[in-house]
Length: 220
Ligand SMILES: [Zn+2]
Image: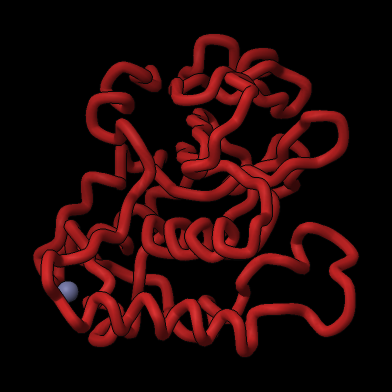
């Protein structure tokens, strides 16, 4: 089955955004709570050794991964015990912007097993939420961020599982098949990033650089 980049661009044109209700006091309070909690416990003790030390990993302690209904609002966080990859990615990016850490939003397509996709469909169907992120039995849509490394290159980082995504990963489920990277609301001069030694234009779905050589046409 071909990975349809045009369909991806139509269904997932950009990363998820946690929005504010107009005139909702709880939304304001939730935003202050997240920022305040991050200020209290989000920073590493001592100087950060790598950019990974700057990630707000307390989010994974606060929320399990699971289904949410979109659109998702800030005040929904008060009721949520589970959030999905879009909420994790958005909140991580939101806090990194507040901390002044350069990064990008990233959307990816990851492989999965039939067993996993079947299990996840059940998880999302139970509360009646859309499972359109399960693209096929063997491919899922996922959200992450891209962090700058040396010399203009970026690395994809999974803000749900807190691990690097890329062709070097031993587990194929962490090797993206397609990727879209965009600015995290920062005014950047660059219109491209270097990902796995390939130039990737910002804001466009592309087959992962790693998919070109070995898998050529992006056949799933
Ligand atoms: Zn609200």
